[in-house]
Image (cartoon, rainbow, N blue to C red; front, top):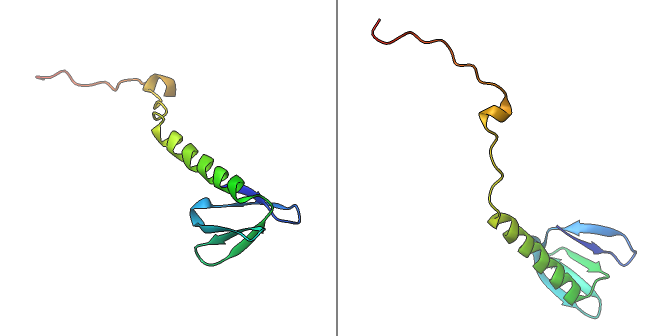
Length: 88
């Protein structure tokens, strides 16, 4: 999500994947895929930079190695169950 500001000063978050286009007439208007329009205080270059940072962050997190999985010793002691000797 990116955070943008209405002309009233109220901030809100929007999913940049839903932005179809950005219009500048001279106010900046975000047009979503469903036709919804949001008039925002940020300039077009500022919104474009926010979307680029968002997408770069998604890619950077995807390229990070996964967190290590907890081992049995970290989860607590594992006591083996008694077994029968083989051949008896």
